[in-house]
Length: 394
Ligand SMILES: Cc1ncc(COP(=O)(O)O)c(C=O)c1O
Image (cartoon, rainbow, N blue to C red):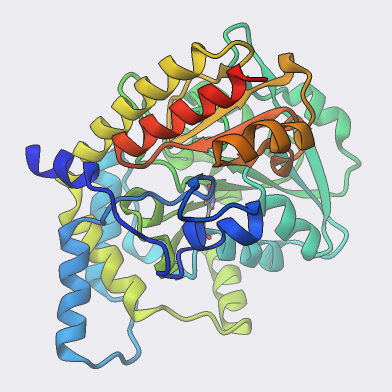
């Protein structure tokens, strides 16, 4: 226990390691990495589990980096993780390896839709969804989420239905939700399934954040919540957010329906996607040896969230959405009537804290900021001091 919290407390110098989070601060925010604290892109300033590092070390010791297969160890590691952590039983041959979850979404769009087809997302949502949809020349259908009485997002499927033109083929769901941190209930998933079936839509359930769920909430994999949705469902999961290994760019695509899976495999062939040796090995190592690390990470992140939430609520005009999952906190500053450029000039330039701008997450994201709190507590505390001082001096 002690071992992991000390590990998470350790401040690492990532500057000059080609870390996007740290080394892009100057180009993206105009902030010097030596002075700024990055709270934007979703990677954590923590070392990955020892099991993963040992696996890389073993590969390096052998020094041969040839082609790899999606072997039984890899598939079995995924099957057993889903069973152990999510009580979700999947068959090994339903799992396919791709180069990350955004890659999986792009491949799904190619496999199952045509240029001009409509694809539905619930905004604000992880910005790569709209980016890939638009870049693939599909038509983006953004259905805004609404806030309930306690400020949490929920879907408004009646409003979604009103947006449809009859040309829609796919619905991409972020489950759990980034940036709102919602863990969708079984009932909400059933409603999405019913909606998709009624409108003949394929559901792409992006469950990359499924392991990062806090006490009191349970993530239910879509397929487990609604087994009857299998014919029109694909699920995307990954070790990358859970174990902080996003740079290895490997994701798992799970498609139970055989015909649909065959279609996806053809697209993998057409676009020449084959497994990465690092991805396959690191995925197996993380799933087989990362349980205890993850349990401790969740405790550490929950304490970080408790600190973040308490401090943000001390700042007049800021409202932080209650966090059920992810290490990404969504803060509403609309009551301050401050434009994004005023925020940049008055708050960001003074605090030198780089958060993600809500606008990037689509309709409904304006006037919000997303803060990544997966960092050593001491660093988080000093980021919060700076944010507080900057807001209070406006
Ligand atoms: C919902 C969601 N999907 C996908 C990704 C990125 O996945 P990958 O790096 O595997 O492409 C992220 C990264 O933050 C995310 O939040």
